[in-house]
Image (cartoon, chains in turn red, brown):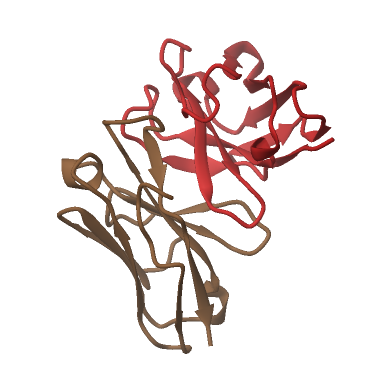
Length: 122
Length: 112
């Protein structure tokens, strides 16, 4: 059974940093691209960042480019999101999502974690 | 403002049929990229409902169907049931901008 478990969320002040983690199990992690998708309270889904199986291809939404860094450790079956210079508008539930392919080209997400909540507020 | 446009809400009585539209442009749906649909039940994570425009993952009832034409796509739900009450999101890929993975704004389905 595929499981994606996010952690690392919490309350943080504007301008500070936070690192999210996603522990994956139930599938061969290094066979697939992975993504972070967020959902602000009461709002819709927004793709944040994606990374190919070997970290050779990485992409970011304009809203987080230059502030967030996605990475993965295939030996630990884990996905990460380093979030710096956080803003109030980054407040959201952050989901880890599995891609159906290894390269993440024109793809979609077949499994999602339950999310970890990030609240940016002073 | 989402790249893909969905109606904010739709409703129907049990047993009825409802459709949810998803309108894109020539750089996403119209460029030939597939449309996928997710169902988000209250308080839960999104779940893949339809992939590749019209395909259902294992376990999804055949009451759910998808189609695509031109720059738009649709999700149809027949034999509406109370447990179908949820938010529904379409998703595609856009080759002209970042974010490349684009979602619709979501449609809240209410079963009357």
